[in-house]
Amino acid sequence: MRHLLTIVVCSLLAAATFSAAQETITTKVDQIFAEWNTTSSPGCALAVVKDGHIVYEHGYGMANLELGIAISPQSVFDIGSVSKQITAMAILLLAQEHKLSLDDDVRKYLPEIPDYGSTITIRHMLHHTSGLRNYDDLFDIEGIPEADLTTDRDAMDLIVRQKGMNFKPGEEFLYSDTNFFLMSQIVKRITGQTLRQFAQDRIFGPLGMTSTHFHDDHTMIVPRRATGYAPHEGGGFEMDMSNFEQLGDGSVMTTVEDLFKWDQNFEHPVVGAADAIRQLTTPGTLNNGQPIPYGMGIFIDHYRGLNWWHHSGEWVGYRAALSHFPDQHFSTLITCNCIGSMEPMRMAKRVADLYLADDFAPAERSTSAENLSTVSAATLQRYAGTYWSEKNGALRSFVVQDGRLTMVGPGMTYDMLPQGNGQFELVEPDSEHRDKYIFRSAKNGEAELETWEGGGPVVYAATKGSGPDASHLNDYIGSYTNDELQATWKLVVQNGKLIRQQWMAEDQQLQPSFPDGFIADLSEGEFLMHFVRDRNGRVTGFDVATDMVRPMRFLKVEKPESSN
Image 1: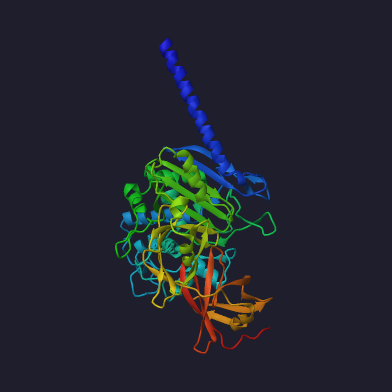
Image 2 (image 1 turned 135 degrees about the vertical axis):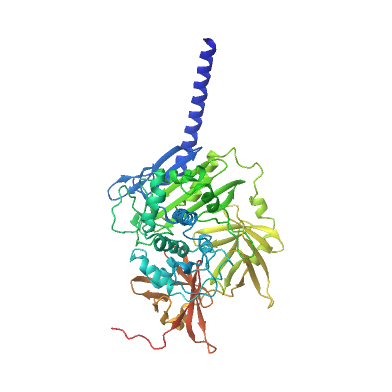
């Protein structure tokens, strides 16, 4: 009897110790979200998964500020690009039934897609190696705001009008929403069902995801939906929602509790079986055999020495993160309803730091300040500056801070890890993936930069001087058109600033950046424009580019449009 009593007492003590440890961890988890855990701000829903169970879930902040409704684990959010892995699963299900092959030409199912001279396969699109321009950015450049109503037809018309690509299929890895939107159209052409209907029948239904759907009707009432928000310039928040109705690249609405059911399908496949999970989580390769850090709708990565599968979602006022450590059977699922300083994947990483502290490799790849500062400040200063790629229409800017070289951009700073002889690796805070950067002298003696960001080398030339001053802005005044977008930009000067004016869009100030070059914000990210001149120095047009659209030419209208 005493022996039995001892066992019972020890079991109770062990349970109490575990409970206390769990409470300590969850208290620290709550601190990660403390900034948003108020009744006056949007926030996040969280589910922490270990060994097939939700070990902690919580809601922080408000789902609806107007009605005073708090976020809970049952709140419904748009998860943006986290949707892509679900779209990929739909395609893999059709492949398993031999209704398509991943190596089929996309034009077999969508013959209206232009023939660019190289075959674009479904596999290319699943791995983001197709070279197709990102249609969301094209809408932005066209002047259509995310709050407007756009449909499948609008998106297809825009994509079909494109006469060029970013690169030949398989040559590079470059993220593009066009790939996964087109897969929604392939599902419709093959099955006669919309992706919303197909996913409900074949994915969400079988997994018991009762609060999940692809959202293809902007008028639809969604029970428990959280409203998307953005910080208001004068303080507080404003609604940030979209009426886009395209599917595939995004548009899944779900809860963290339903995402748990999807996440567990990676551990114990109910939908797609083990072969589909293997394909989703196998990195793609380029034409030259080089692997890329992306499977099918999910990044295949490492974090602190552990295998890590992850994907973020960003759409209007919504943010989401799915973070999965397959070997530890551990996941963090986060959905949020505000843009700005909210970074769900960074939060997910901090949660993993707490729960997996004993699992991380003891000798992690170091990016400490000591290792980042092995090059003298004087040498680093030679690399500082702004570099421009005419081919990609992109800028890379570097500064020296605290004795280290840092790449800076909109809302981001990346430390550069010295490798010797002018070579650096970019240190991504949420990944162990490293892109290579090489600073050197060009044949003309000027500085240049070679980067390896998409699987192949891109050369950037150092820019000379800053952007044009106000006295030269009149060179750019006029109207400019692009027939692929069926868009016209009107550029005017107001109060010493160059302004972009466009139908449906608010006036937008263009920021001088380098000679004949300007930058300005997109709905997501920014665009860069570079004016082109004839041999007499007269402006004849400009090229505009984004991170996911290589330069597109706008031509100046010679005869100014008459004003009413």
